[in-house]
Amino acid sequence: MANSLQDLLGIEGPIVLGPFGGLSSVGLTAEVSNLGGLGSYGLYGYSPERILDTVGQLRAATDRPFAVNLWLPVGDEATPADVDLGPTLAAMAPLYEAADAAVPTPPERFLPDVEAQLAAVLEARPAALSVVFGVPSAAVVEAAGERGIRIIGTATSVAEAVALEEGGVDAIVATGFEAGGHRVAFLRRPEESLVGTLALVPQVVDAVGLPVIAAGGIADRRGVAAAIALGAAGVQVGTAFLRTRESAATDGHRAAIAGAAETDTVLTRAMSGRLARGLPNRAMRALETAGVLAPFPAQNWATGGFRAAAAARGDADLVSLWAGQAAGLATRERAADVFAELAAGLLPRRSGNEA
Image 1 (tube, rainbow, N blue to C red):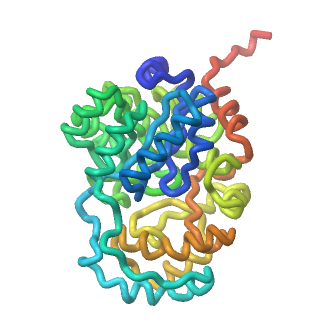
Image 2: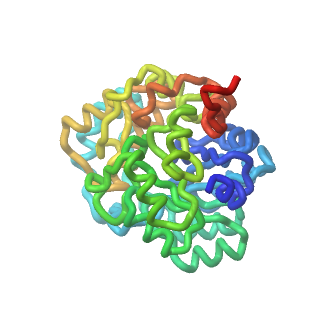
């Protein structure tokens, strides 16, 4: 199965960089691709023009295959007309003050039109498009196929994996609840879709006939070897790469990951309005205590103002510290060293009788 993923994507090793929405960098994406894996870049919130520009930058940085990632709508996304942000912004006022940022005026819309984003990706023709929170439409699948773009879906359950296969995707990321960032369930509430990687991957492998990429709790050669033993065709790794100097994470975010243990991450809706795993800090605790939560993406937009200002100041206490449960294993500062460690898990084990 591993070779099928490499053949499918045109890569040398079945190691996929997790796409970081808001934390992707051209440098890290290109580095993973240049090392022989599949670099990925998260396009959450990007305008069509920015998507085309970003893909152009990636092409200038690598001649190897890479993927870009988009969030599909699930139908519950709030618009500015749907929600009164007054109480939310009032609750966040101390955080804006701490970040030395002005409380913003609500925009006309929170997110770019996803159809326009998809059109831009199709025009840009990356090697692969990965999607979260749903199944791409038949029209998108057909258009991608005509352009030679592979589609990678993301599942948090067997049922979602089956739906993605029936929808025509080319490969599936089976992401366990250990993974950092947003829980991307789309058939049931994410709180009802918290299956661990060890249980999820073999069941998805048995249920579908597509290459399955294991994600969640994988940060070194042991995790890779375990995923392959479970039947995965490859692995997707986020936190270990987010820790490296090539990522767009702030120094404070990297330091928080470096100091994390397996029990430190929590699941919260406080930062974006959707369930996500990260390390607690002042912002998360304050928002959880306030108990004023706007729906997604209103909450994400509302926290975005102070998060951006805090990131610019290097204040890790007021940003989203996304990280997975294997953060304690994310010890390497260079992407090349992370990649080499992961690749070691792909090598056949030698028996005890061999020299």
